[in-house]
Image (cartoon, rainbow over all chains, first blue to last red; front, side):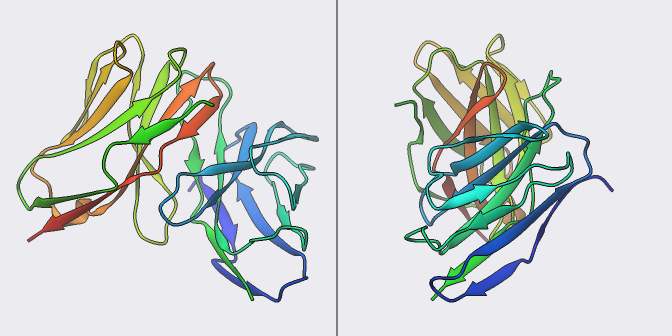
Length: 114
Length: 111
């Protein structure tokens, strides 16, 4: 089955610790994205990558970092510099070939920092 | 800045009735629109899409209407079922890549 996997589903960390969220896709998609979702708000773009070894900041990149060493993988690190890291994090991917520009989403990781 | 908004944060309907969820977008250059369904604790799932050269598209029990003049789109769900209870997002895509998501409308289906 093709799709996107995120792990773990729930993650707990102490304040001041960095944490890395995993995202893997086997859809052969070039583009991958990380979003943050807070209650009552739309998805906010953290980082995106259109191709391997390249990525760009989204609207709320401060306190986060990413890497794209492989087409299939786009891990997100939430650093201690992120002031309010507790949220639901969603990874997505899309084909750049068209005609559909649909983003396929993973199941999400709920991060709680105390 | 560019935005996508939904008119109501929540919508409650009786089982069997039709549901209509509305969305407004700000960028007239947006040329592709998607509706997603998100169940609690899960990632959004694609429901239906529509291109800007169309004004209506139908799927199974769902219809999307697009009015480019007023930059508005709606999702209609026929014969709403309890399994339709979820948060529904619209998304506007510009230039084949830049995607802006709305905040979502939570649909409650009363039995």
